[in-house]
Length: 434
Image 1 (cartoon, rainbow, N blue to C red):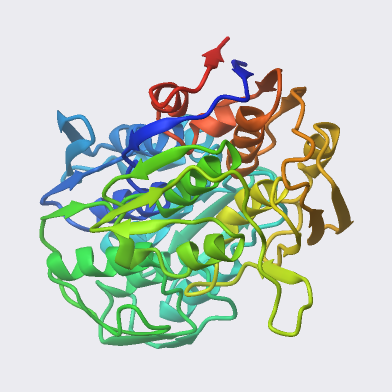
Image 2: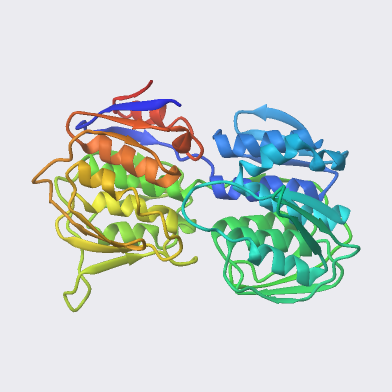
């Protein structure tokens, strides 16, 4: 496993362009299976998870042409459905959680799909019931082989139905929307996820000939069509990376301009960072973060300690809570971080405590951060990245710390961040891949 060696304490300066959104890319790539025609996708991030899914699609028989960096043409005309029963498919798909979203497209177009139990981040239990219950209501039959950990899904025909989802799962909504787009009749999905990435998927499907209304709300209506055509689609900038850069600038007292952020799609993210006392300025579609000697966390109106918690969109995305937690360690004031949606994402705080941060882990979901207002700099240590978002949070901490830090298992970071060491070194960081 590769590692990052980081020499911290350096102020960064310059411009950085966010990559294409990882979470959108995984949905969009699965959607190419819905049509035999060519689909062109641009702004695809060059990261492990996306490249694994592209490789999986190619192994399934999708013809793939790379036009230029980040732009590909996909054509799922002659798929090898027998491959889906192979050992190679099981191994590839089980290592990538996003691969669960091939079920909806395959089921609606071919009447059958196969899926091993998917992997992904070790951030607690992430159940698939929402996916399966919605597809079952559309007419699918699921069989699970507990020995092989393998799902077989079949449907003679899918018919539109009313679906009230028990949770606003993004990937669950995506799977059901893709299946319903080719089902017979009208499907209504209530308590649907409404993240910008899901909105992007719906807009792409409509460009392919689908009939989806209610986009951007939690009530979607899908009128099934007989077939879908090809289209061109550009992926949004990655809001998680944008938030990471905002936090990095504050922690390292750096002046950074984040270019082409798709500001109207960022929701409450800029507001949350402003509540931490971070100054940021919108300049057209860019965000300018000035160098700040200090930043002070807001309190609630009654003077009580600020709580930052995650929630389904349009609430604050759980993927940025670890960034907020790290940034708070050097702020003036205190904040309670409440991670509601996953039970293990705060378990990296022991590394921050070893670096000198003042954090009380209350339980698996809550941590109180007592900001040090830069009175005591974090110190460099050796640590291991447990998941994508915690990994980048530790990287930000290391960049602000005094001395040398080493982060092991950086494949976790590479899963979600494209050339992060190269791009940050261009701003003046000292990160060495060893």
